[in-house]
Each structure stands twice: as structure tokens, then as C-alpha cells.
Image (cartoon, rainbow, N blue to C red):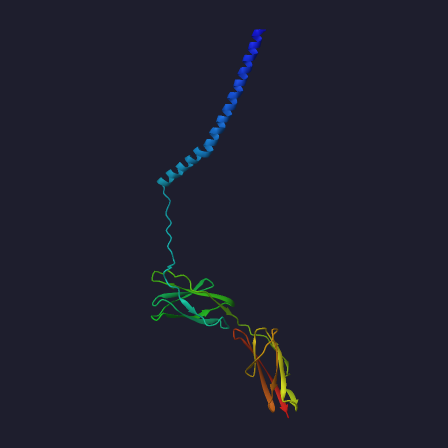
Length: 243
């Protein structure tokens, strides 16, 4: 009986010991795997890359700058903000005896020489309808460019303004009275109106109206609408006055 008891105790101790050894083995395997992923594998990959760089070094990329920040940018001279011309001349001043390149909406257009007095002119520059963003850069003898000049926004508009005349009707005849006639009509808001060369007040909605003095006989009344880009619409009315 005593012998059987001792045998069971020995078997139990052996089973507990085996279980502990199994757990320890699992822990060691986990530690080894973590170390491999964290330290050993990256070091191995880095060593391979290092050896590759020694045996086959990467080619160096050489970039050449196209800018020379020490160059003074030119100054463009465009004395108006809008035009009705599709082509214009653009003048300015820059570094004497250098070159200047013109850009329109970030696209290069012309390159001209700067004279000894610092002046230059770009001739017959073609514009696009709407807003044109214009700037220029100084160019040195190594074809390097300065920083851009101040950008000038220039509007090109070739559309004539609206003009309608509500009174007087053409060939109107007036007899007696105050020797005057009412001239009224409508145009686009912001447009200037001239009647026989005299500017009249235009309302915020584009409407206008004045009393025009008449001479005896036929009177030709010229009504002209001019917008900010100098596009013009002109109409005439003839009024005959008899005392």
C-alpha cells in the first residue's frame, strides 16, 4: 500500500515538472521570436542594404538651379487696368545690358534685350479675353532667371456696351414750347454716357436722362456709351424744332 502511494506521488511530481518545462519552453520560444523580429531581422536587412550600397553605390542626382536670386527683377509699366486691344506693347525698366523674359499666365512669351539706359519694350503681346496675369524676369548670361516682378492683372474686353434710347424717337418734330427735348435711355451699369460730347449721370441700374437744348431747324443728338475698356456704342437721333 505504501509502495503504491509513493509511486503516485512520484508520477504527480513528474507531471508537474513536465508541465513547467513545457511552459518555460513556450516562453523561451516567444522571447526568441520577438528578438528575431525586433532586432535580428532588421539588422540583417540593414547589413544587406549596406553591402549593396558598397558594391553598387547609388547614382547622385545633380540638379541645376534655373534661378539667380541675386538678380534684380524688372519693373513692368502698364498704365491701365483694362483694354479693348487684343495686342499691346509692354515697356519697363531692368538691369542695363541684361535680358528680360515676359510671362503671361505663367507661360513664357518673349525675351528682349535691355538697353544701356535700362529700358525695354515687348511689342505686340497677344492677350486672352478676360484677366491676363503678366510678370517678367531678368535673365543673366548663363540663362538663369531672377525672381518674378510684381504681377499685373490686365483685363482684355472687346464687347461693346448695351445702349438703348427710349426718347426721343428719331426725326421727332417739336413746335413752340421750351425749345428742349428729353433724351433718355439705358446702358450697362458702370458705363459712361456722353450726349453731344457732354458726360451725363448714369444710375446704378444703367438708366440716364437729361433735357437737351435745341436750335431752330434740325438738331442731331449723338448718344455715346463707353465702358472701362473704351469699347463704344453710339447712336443718333434727329429732332426738328420749329418756333
